[in-house]
Amino acid sequence: MWSRGPPWPWPPHARRRLRAVVFIVGHGGGGAVQFEFVLVLKGDPRGIQRLPDTFADFVAGDDRPGTMHLWEAACGYYRWIVDVIYDPRGKMYLHIGWEKFARHHRLQAGFVLLFSYFGDRDMSVKVFDKTRCRRNYHGDSAEDDDD
Image 1 (cartoon, one colour):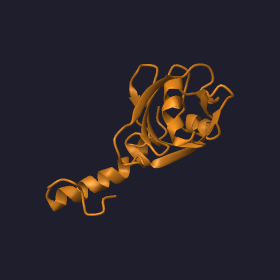
Image 2 (cartoon, rainbow, N blue to C red):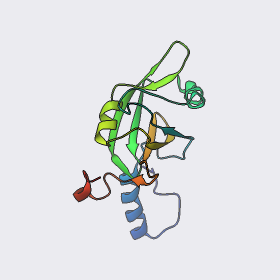
Image 3 (tube, rainbow, N blue to C red):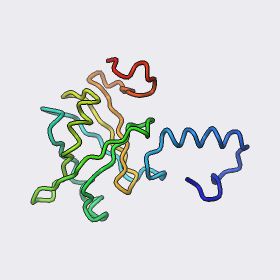
Image 4 (cartoon, helix red, strand yellow):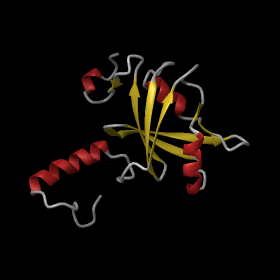
């Protein structure tokens, strides 16, 4: 990730540990969050999802991306490539690939998703259930499918 090592003077053993964490968390861009938004799921959570107009305007500078790479926050090696479509008014939607993401995460109406955009089409997603508690899907592989 870094060409000459990390940009801080930590001891070598700490740098090795941190590199492992960065690999696991890796949101692709490796940079700071450029944009965040919350999406409250209504209706069928597996159907196409409209993204906020402000976000669509923000990424329009990136020549209207045709896909987004969704990462589970804190679990960067699980990635979903989701097609993005635009209607004639410029509204932006998550389309093909979203259903697979929603099914895998057992999303339901009323869930709240926090999207963090890192640029270069990379976004992390935190999922909060109806009790507004965060769901962790892959923090412990023994509990992957537990609700």
